[in-house]
Length: 290
Image 1 (tube, rainbow, N blue to C red):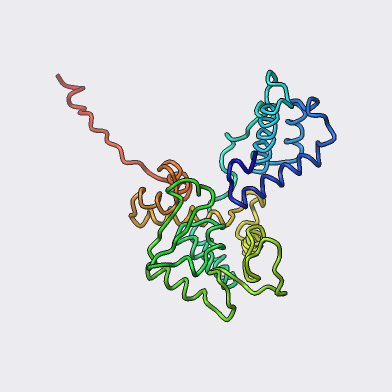
Image 2: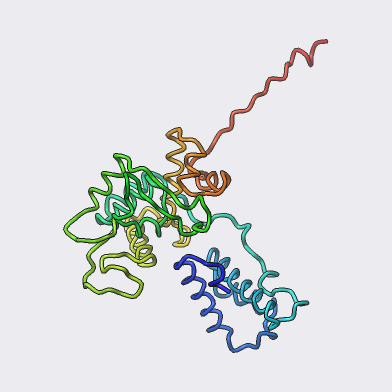
């Protein structure tokens, strides 16, 4: 079922993790004994916010598949789909502002600084940034495919190498020979599972490293950890900075590989109070006097 959807490797890994978690926690139950209450209590007791939403989606997919195989009665509701979706709770994570970005950048190791700079200038996500190779630069441009939308034509980006990007790539080169623009020398030269090269950073470890740096600043001590901005918020900050600099919505939309302007506007929102210019031109004279 999962393979048929042709997900990105990271997405596939996350889906498999959630299904294995569900098997571990509720695998002792017969499929016909799992009802809405069972799933609702399981989700509410074990997950919060984004984790809740994603695990709920995985369980819903599982029972949808079970119905197609005749393992779950077609006349019964999908027990996960009936549960509270929590999608109306809004965004929990705080946006990152430019001053906060600067503080984190200042204490970050060189390889993380390079990653942060690529994210804010090229508006790419964690996966694209840490998987970018020097070989991806050809004929004066970077060729990048957004993993989350890679099946769509707008996901395949050709980004001309500006002087700004050229400088970032130049500064990324150091004494460590690596095919990856964002790289580091680990304590031990070991090629772990999933790595192409011993200097490569893996998605989850990279995320943890960024969270550690973020928390070291003390800027977000008043926020629960689940509300503190992640590396992903750099992309949002960058899109807003492009907007402030006068770049069109279409320009930013294409760079972010979004299918529509609504998604781009969502990323740009939340950084400042916006004031909409409206006209109030009704003639009072025409009302008071005939």
